[in-house]
Image (cartoon, rainbow, N blue to C red):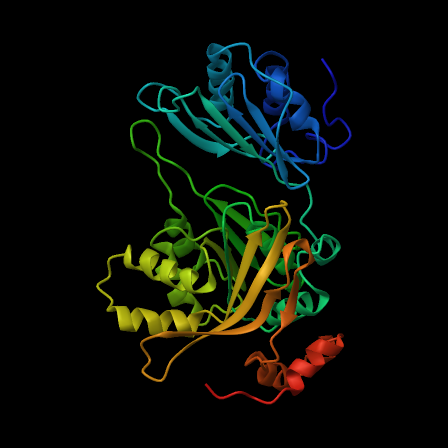
Length: 391
């Protein structure tokens, strides 16, 4: 058997999750030799971030931000199903006619989703999303042109100033990577609680508690939701709460926590624009079925969320921050006002995130908190000195 990750303790460039036992990992390596051999080279390649098996004869990978058809295939549909069943064993789930869907995490931390045939009309689908061993640093985003130095400095300043930030964007647009980067603004002594449906975030800070939801077994028992974990996290004396992705009623719990003293929180949400982010938060909060009137919910959301950050994935595969905005309400108190601070301008890959010239509300508090020594860039200084704009 070829050696795999002997030096790193995992697949090349990717780590084995802390809770995975060595015996379990060795067994998974052995299974690669027999069941997952067609995709093994991609699991060993640190530059491959996504593996998509569309039936036995079409395997796609994402590498360098681009999706491409791989020169690999399984022998038959039965071989793909055998691979899927083997994966299911390692995530503690079963696949069958009664349970044709599976979502879980591999021993190396990769997220895996399986849909069996005939639900998947052209053959069993296996999707593996891989995550790097280490959390991305701010320099990573700057090096790849995902954000400008001025905007990066502003966001880190907002994190240090305990602003609540929601990162929105489409699938694969870089939301998780951006949140990973923003956690570098957390203080070294802060207690950080990370809550996720499936573990993706790699928060590299000293005092981190990572919580992961649990799906019910085949009899519907034992489910622990993100909302359950969020309520538990509030009792664990957090300095910061990071929710990997808000999807359901936990959005209301998070909004209420943000307005009751739990500042400096981060979360992501699937959305098509900053305005859509607000409306999706509304929809998810209404799932909690508390009977809260819409106007009251909007006031809570506008009070809780300080900054909306939006990410996009360009046709070239490049991921960028496209918008950074402050959130408020109009004079009636019933409608959102989104004040753009940075917007993406230009065409194609030459687009740049530019400051709009608007003075952020953050500026006054930053000066009062005496942390202006953290502002090192000329544009950020000009933001603080810009005249306040009435709404």
